[in-house]
Length: 313
Ligand SMILES: Cc1cc2nc3c(=O)[nH]c(=O)nc-3n(C[C@H](O)[C@H](O)[C@H](O)COP(=O)(O)O)c2cc1C
Image 1 (tube, rainbow, N blue to C red):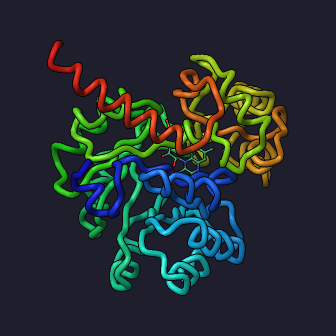
Image 2 (tube, helix red, strand yellow):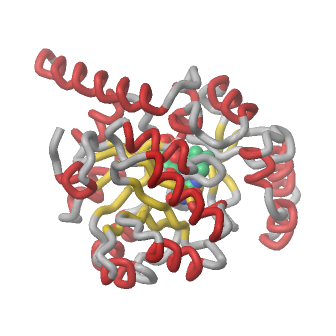
C-alpha cells in the first residue's frame, strides 16, 4: 500500500504504534517495524541512558524505520534530544506540549517530525510550526488527552478540512475496519495504542495486559483534567480520585494524591489497586494478547476485506 504516510516514513502499511510510557520499548517498536508498520519507542518513562540503550537495541533488532516519542512534559528534555541526535534517530513524534519548542531544531538536523494533538487549534499550530505530519487523537484514546473531549469521529474530518500535511488518526482504532473508517474520514494513516498494550512484546506488566483483555465498555474514564487529563481504568486509585473530587479537592490536593510513580506502579509493576492504569475505550474490544506482527497483519487483512465489501453498501 502506498500513500503520503507510507512514503513519508518509508514503511509498508500506514499503521503507527503509538509511543507509550512503560509499554513501548525496543521489543515492541522493532516488532511493529519488522511487520511493516512504524514502531515508536516511548521515551516518556525512560532516563536518558535507558533511551539510548533502547534505541541501540532497536537498531540491532530491525533494519526498518522506527521512531521515538518525546512527550514535552519530560523534565530533562534537552538530554533526550541530545541522544536523538547522537544516535541518529530519523523520526521523532513530539506530544503534550508546544510544537514550536523543538520542531525547527529537529528539522534542521534532517529529522522527520510528527506532533500529536487533540484539537483543531493545536493541529493548526503544529502545521504552522513546520511539522511533517500530525497525529490527531480523539477522546476515546488511552493515555493523556485533551480537555475538550472531541471524539475521533469529529476530530479527524475537522482537522482534515483545515490542514494540508499528512494526517494520522488516533483514538479507538484497534481493528482494520476502524482503520478503514478513519481513512474514509480523511486520515492518511492510523496510530494505535491500546491494542499494542495487549501484545506479547509490550513491556508492561502481565497483570495490566489482563485488565485490558477483560475490560468492558464503560470501564475507563478521562479524569484529572486539572493536572493533565488522562484516561484511566476505574480501579481503587481512580475511586480515590473521584472521592477527592466529591470532597472538593483543589489542584494541589489532587497532585498530592497522584504523588509520584503511579503510572509505573500500575502499568509496569502490575499494582492494579494503587497504580494508574492508562488505556483507551477500545479496550472493550480487545480480547486477547498476541504478537505485534499478528496485530498488524490482521488489521491489514481486515482493512482490505472491508474495503472490498464497501461497494455493496
Ligand atoms: C499505556 C499508554 C501509554 C501512553 N503513553 C503515551 C506517551 O508516552 N506519549 C504519547 O504521546 N502518547 C501516549 N499514549 C497515547 C498513544 O500513543 C496513542 O496515541 C493512543 O493510545 C491511541 O488511542 P488508542 O489507545 O485508542 O489506540 C499512551 C497510551 C497508552 C494506552
